[in-house]
Image (cartoon, rainbow, N blue to C red; front, top):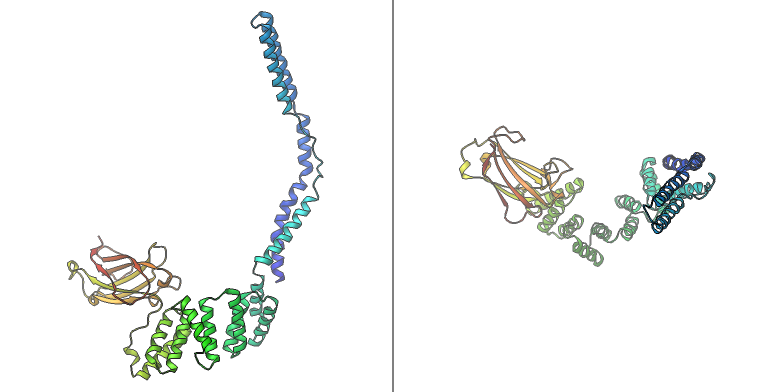
Amino acid sequence: MSLLWVGFAILLLPVLWLLVAPLRRARLVHDAQASFEENDKSAEQNVAIYHRRLASLEAALERGDIDQASFEADRLELDRSLLEDTEGLKRRPLHSPASGRFVVPLVAMVVVVGSVVWYQQHGAEGDLALYEAYQESDSLATLVERLEQQAERQPNNPNVWSSLYPIYRDSGQGAAALNALENLIELEGRQASLLAHKAQLKFFMANRSFTDEVQALVDETLALDPREPTILGLMGVHAFDRGNYEEAIDRWRRAIAGMPDSGSSDALREGIRVAQQRLGVAPEEQEPIAQGPGIHVSVRLDESLEGMLDDDTRVFIVARDMEGELPPLAVARVTLGDLPVTLVLDDQHAMSDAARLSQVSEVRLLVRVTPSGVATPAPGDMFGDLDGVAVGSIEGEPVEVVIDRVIE
């Protein structure tokens, strides 16, 4: 932590140097301005111009070019002009170059103190302390001790309680885990994911029983998010315990669809396999489990293009974001002989964790038949697409993409 404050001090040094720089140059600026004012001949030049114009007026009067009344009016205007010109040249006395020298250190102190106070209010000093606790702990017991110390020092930091909760839960300290979770809910609000974890914890603390409190938490969570995976997994466990294996399989499948944690997903898949065995259904006869929101799509070849390519020609089915800014969100490969084909695109078909179907609400579907078998479009490839396809439930009728064009 001391290195952090050393870094802040180093960053503040240029700021303080910029604040002090005008004070160091004050004497030079004062002397330059004083020299300029001493050598300024503007007043003398204005007076000389006045005398020339006055002489011109007097000469015009003597020649009879103007009468006495005109002469008096023009001279009055000339006098007024001289007064206005000389009025603007009056300067106030220069301040001493040492004037205000105490303000600069005061401003510098305000900048330093203000920066420190702002960081303490809005910075991440507490999170850095948590990071150090993880880095300096060589055992779970040491880590828990350091995290508990941080909980005493910064009880309003939600990251402290979110770090302690899973450790308490996984080590069987139900009461401590519940306390950490309740503190987290108090700080973060009654979010669906936090309420789901509380319901799950209460469920297992009550010997896998749906008490009134557990049921109330389940109802509140489902009202906030009907697809919350932790709650769906919990409801699957409850159904399994009651021997309702079909309901357990349904709940667990829906939970896996919204669950990013592969470890938890694998545990639920194992539960599904056991439930299927209890039902006397072979696991391999079950349909693949969708991973998150998806698209139910049907692809067929237009009749006008039939027979142009061999049945083993590769077909790419690609989902892209509407703006075309991300890598392909999902890619499936079939052959021309498989058409017409119906399938589900979901996060299992992602090419990268950074670009998945579950990240968007709409996509553009592109289907390309390519004799070369490469991903880059080429002349002779057959093509079809469909814009504005919604990503969501895979239930119901599939959207249809027709391959009806040839790339020239």
